[in-house]
Image: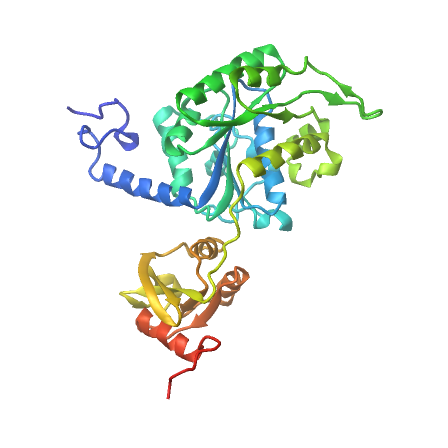
Length: 415
């Protein structure tokens, strides 16, 4: 056999390594590493929500973007991943241009959103945003995997995924890569849209993807003068479709010219709930999602238990924090080390390492050569930072810390 069994480019082949003889050397070993990275990423994300629709033009991206904003404004940690590769609009709707940190999907967001919202889109990688993306399935699949394996999302309560309309490559890739994803399906009251949304429901049922429910967008228009609801199309179609398919009906969202104008101008983040009937209609839907998919509970640290992280080089404390090849994690209970392990070094970029260490339950970091800014980011997460002598073993450094900081009620036995 001279090529990949699927006929795909060997660089993007996802065939079984045992049956594939056409891939470049080391390709499948790299794929195994990617699988591990994806698994590590998904483990840190509590809930994954795939926003999809049966056809275009129903406001799916508006629902996805505003859902992510609404969740982030409630103080939750949210990722927004745009996999509508042929028609990416997320960055434009939010008015985002150059990322501050591509690895962490971090942009220059307002203070109330900066620590709570991360965004990734193919537009970040395009020199010319007007260029068409002409890709087949394997390349799309690989990019979605890269979004999950190479972006350091950190600990998230929700990852909102904006998929293209229909049931093609991108939703299938998300379903394959994130089997625990939940689908939120957007439609309009028109029968032509409802016919296509029934295909989306069937798609989810065939691949065993959980359906959170249906949202009816553009359900009506409120007169700006008298406030009376004016139907743009017939109403109630989505609710009847949901009942017939035995899936939840989450609610109706009105057509709101202010949302359209703000999205076109890249100013969605400046629009408040008080100003927008759309956001007001979204509130009960967000409440339902929070009840159905509760966010991560705040990490409760066990009284009397300390967990140390130490950057290592050749098994001993690294002389420079940025040169560490591993991290040692040591758990201390009742003044004694009860558990010890090593992990790959978390990313050093601002925002990445503190979140990962927080998710690991770290209470203390012992390091050499750690800058004030990095110390501040760790302390902001409630992690105490202490200096340590390079080339000492992690066991010795933790023992020295315990000797210098005896627990309350314990007598220090040092001479």
